[in-house]
Image (cartoon, rainbow, N blue to C red):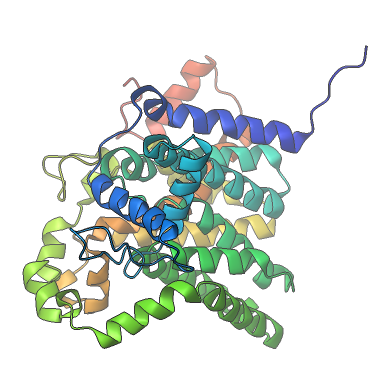
Length: 408
């Protein structure tokens, strides 16, 4: 009898599937987890379904909500998560609870698959891809988004960010004509969350600036611009009405005074809500700034990557090393933008769009996961095994990372 042989790609996908299932265990056990924004998003999701049932070709307004006054669920907020949740509801047999859970699971699992593909293609190391993907899926801020904030608008960026970066890397390093990943990443961002577009746009701009010498080719610039134009065209059904509403309306949300006074989007508020460096590494919820009910620590894996990446980078291939260095710089920059080390009262008011400086952990978690996965992978692969087996590794980690309680 012949043995059943599974392809390496299938085995990798199954491994990440198990990781995603474990991450979502609380959802399977409890049905739903009440988070900060859950009620708001459920209204949006139900609005999409009602609009479709009402015959809208491009669903944007639910005329049944707010006692018949109507609610423009897709005029302010990208609809991608709502479409995913509605698809999940259909698959689950009509339950919004399980529709939302399937949407969350899809974002977590999709993020792992997209990150593994990106790293595999760049490094040609399957196990490295799995290591980076696992670290990325378990990023502490991701878990906070899922189980504390119910920040469903941000969840699609879990898989969209690796897709976008794979496309950018192909354009810059390979001068490739194939624009699919860049377009999907850009368009998906535009359809998911306005603030995430700003955050990842900032980081993508930094990535392009770091690679400016590789970018200065007519073909690369043309393809990058073409990707942006196609992405804008694909997502136009959302942002065109959004822009039209902004220009034609006089809603308080657009008024600077309302943002600064009522919503407290100003430098003083940002200084108050910013994290301390201690909060990032020790996650001290009492003296570390910002909310005391959310975890903002970057995690042990990210710390290991920050410490171990540079001495290990000499053992990497050039393309891996260049990407890792760029992600290290952007990850550290993102972390700094979450802290009170930034004089927020002197920063341009455009940054106040983020609402809270710790939102930059969304981009920081993406960048640092790549660095952390590589640091941990090369640490285990190249560093000689200390005497004492696992205890020796624990002691070595304790020396390298004295701030971490490895016993807890």
